[in-house]
Image (cartoon, rainbow, N blue to C red; front, side, top):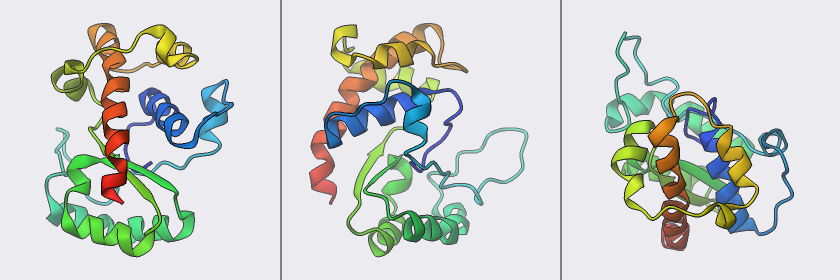
Length: 174
């Protein structure tokens, strides 16, 4: 998974949801079990300049290029079967070439960054899944921390419908 932040639990929840749909029945009862089977990275690891304010680098290929060696090494060593990454980064031609060259059998799932802004601006437009539709994930969902609280946490239930739509399109990206 080349997308962050992983620390609040939101990406663990969506990773489980995605894997469950792509791989079938999964027997993870706790997030720690899933974390032992996945790898996380940050595409912008070497692209972020030290600033007081967080500066978005995803739309800036000239900043992303500094991470290409790091990403190339990740892809060659890990040989992922599924790559979850920000759509804004994936849409760059050079990034697509890098992935194709180093992990050409990988299914790529470009998605929105999972931040309060994208949840409340874009994802909340999708119908919310009901508790009985997400099963064990409801318990995991309740444990999401950080800035995913209040109305944002409630809007997060829409992410499952959004992911359903993205998963259906995955075959178009291969």
